[in-house]
Image 1: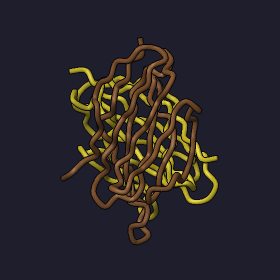
Image 2 (image 1 turned 45 degrees about the vertical axis):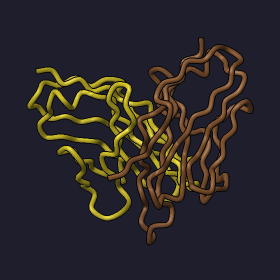
Image 3 (image 1 turned 90 degrees about the horizontal axis):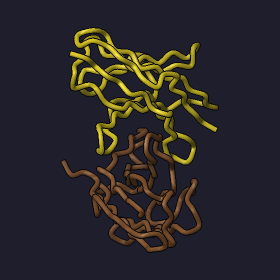
Image 4 (image 1 turned 30 degrees about the vertical axis):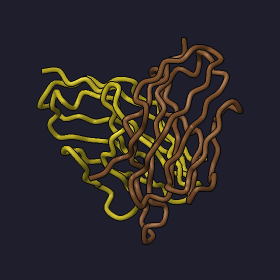
Length: 116
Length: 112
C-alpha cells in the first residue's frame, strides 16, 4: 500500500540558510499535518492543511511557512535557519471525511534537518 | 485542551513477560485515543485506536489497549514481549481540530 513520502530524508544546512521539505500524502487523503520532533522529544504539531487550505496552526515559527498544492502535496519552507531548528520533521496524512469514522494519521519516515 | 500523559520514561521487561505502557488522558467530550510506535530514526507507526465501543482494543503486532473511563487511562499491553518490541511508544489524543497531541513517550527495552 502507498505510504506518505517525504523528501529529502536528510538535509544539512548552515545557519541563516533556507530549506524546503516536501511531503506527498497517501492518495485520496484530504488532510496533511507537519510535526517537528527534537532529540528525545515528542512530536510537536506545526501546521495542517485540509483540502489545500490551512486548517490549524501550532508552534510554527514565523520563519517557517507551508502550503498544500493542487495535487495535495505539501511543502514546508524554513528560512533563516537556526541551530535549534535541527530536528526530525514529519509529515502525516489522513482522511478527515471518511463516512463518520475517526481515522488515524499515517506518518512518513521523516526528514532529518541538521543545521550547522 | 486535550492532553495525554505517559508517567514512565522507560519500561524494562524480560522477553516473554507481559508488557504494559501507561497512558492517562484529559479530554472534554469523547476521547479519541491512539498508540504509535517509533523505531530509531524512523517514522511513527500506528498500533491501535480507541474511538468507541469495546474497552479492549486489539491492534498490530499483538498489542492491545484497555480503555478505562473511570481511571481516565488507556494503557498499552502485550501478553508476551519480544526483543523486537524495543522502541519508543507514544500515546496520543485527537483534538477538535483533528490533529494529534502526543505524550512524552515511553522507551521500552525488552531484554533477551
